[in-house]
Length: 410
Image (cartoon, rainbow, N blue to C red; front, side, top):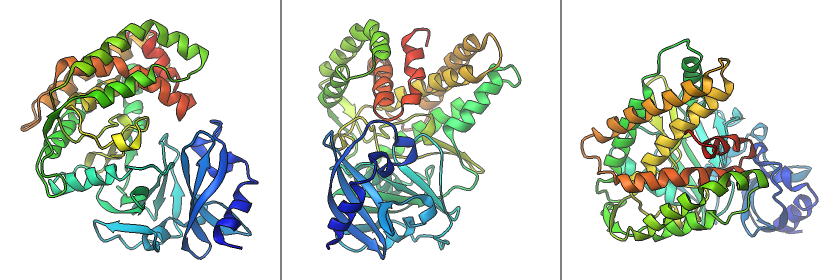
């Protein structure tokens, strides 16, 4: 029996959720067929599984009597760095020496499956196999060539044709995901225990330095800053207005429909604006705080965009809107978890001041491109639409955030 026949026979009798990372289960994703399998090492492989909705799921596999999705306990991630063809390994740095058996998962809301190996290397397995998904590694290589060091050191990527399978970066000791440390800091402030944290300015300045580096010419992207239109983004957001969400979310979105339409019309009219490589999905979870400061991570782009469009250049206002709205979201989450009766009002007040400080710090960075304020306002108006569809597509427990924004006052 061939490898694909073995894998197909084993996987197709399993519940589809068993083929997904734990945080992605329970979303009704159904596997129709296993369409391709490639080996990694003895008893290890990667499969492409076609979903009922037409997308292709990437499944790292291990064999223990039968083939199944590999978990961190299977300690198989490092084998991807020695993958045979047709997989391709692209190395940017020498990988640290690690004990490959010391692999663990992380319980943080992310679109993909992230593992930590020996507290020295981070392996991120892509959830879907998508054309154009090498855009993130290309952006990282561009920033690396421009001398931007405020991100985890890139080590290698593994691709299948032109599609990303996994990426490897250096682990930052003691690093905390932004949703953890920002939420804790703001919750303490909302509860009246500490003064407002100073890091909004740091986030604004860091985003400015990121954009200044992205605007620099490198061998990877020789001409990063150009001019163009925003039809692709406008089309994306117009499509989101027709996305299927539940009845409660639909009712919350309805009063905003004219605002969404106006914002999309503005994007469509922006036919000659300055565009450049962007982060593309800038939110609090992308900022890691560790013993040497704050860095920005995860350059895979907007998970709701078609993968081929994630690499398209855009206006700096797109990232800045993500940063500013992200501060609102932190305040919403902190107020939800606070134990003071005026938590919502205190959260709103903190968010307003934090946004102002972050934006001022961003604009003071030398070499940062100018922000189009009209586009910034449009992208902020479209943010709750994105978050509503993201919650419906990837993370149902996130729905309270867009519902709160849509209810007004943020």
